Length: 387
Image (cartoon, rainbow, N blue to C red; front, side):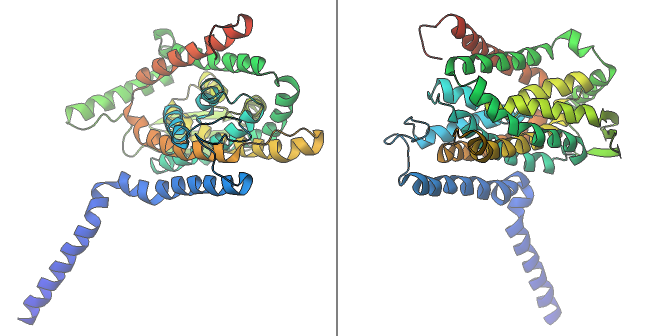
């Protein structure tokens, strides 16, 4: 009798434990969201509220303007802007700044010099959501990102000086943003052309495996899944001259001096504008090495974080110390946008492997190209509407 009762109690406890943990075992993405993302999103948003009171004595929004930005905008609008730009750019391995910056300038009319430093707050914080997501998906490799990030740390402190001395005029600044967007749009559109897809055997082999994997998933009645569950980016060799990685039966070598110089140049340009650098880094890395986006995110996401952090330090400390010119960020504005962008970037990391590149790139390329054309045309011939 006692033995039967003991067995019954053990079974009851086992059932209870299974009931308590069953939901999260069946929904690991929800567990990851509640454990990693929600505290980060809520924390950044609350810091934005605290900073508002500390810096201004009130919470800016639709009724009271953000003092540094000089605009009135509801906080929910900033959260939404952060979310959609964070998701859209996170899918292609970039920070949200390349979309949130022109949106802030043209739609919200945040046009003074501080828009660049404010944008860097978002490009610093929003990739953390994607970083954790891609890390858990094993789309992560520190050796691939290291030398690019060192270049970013060296180059991004120079960008704010370029912004103050050469790009202070809003019209010229928008035109430069237009050129940047045009470069990004052209690269995205070219990547889906038959000529580009036939360019190298490595890219062609990766695409064939990716398409075959999707077909297997669909035939098995599963969700579209381009990358295998055991996908991982591993370091095969590293030195001061060379880094060699492996992924999905592929190998790729990278020159350390080239990566360091690339990270430096891209960082100077990007921190001057107030973006995370992916708009240049992605085309360069894809052109030089033929990396697929699913691997490239292991480098571009950490790169955007380092670039934005060192750029922010330069805008807030180095620039006023050496020149006497102040271009401080609107911290609460940037933090509110970042809290939405963190969620968007994390969702991008969870869904990127299910979305074929030939859907992603034309869509983003066309939208980006239209905005780029408007900015460039407006510099030479004033349009009848604000951009």
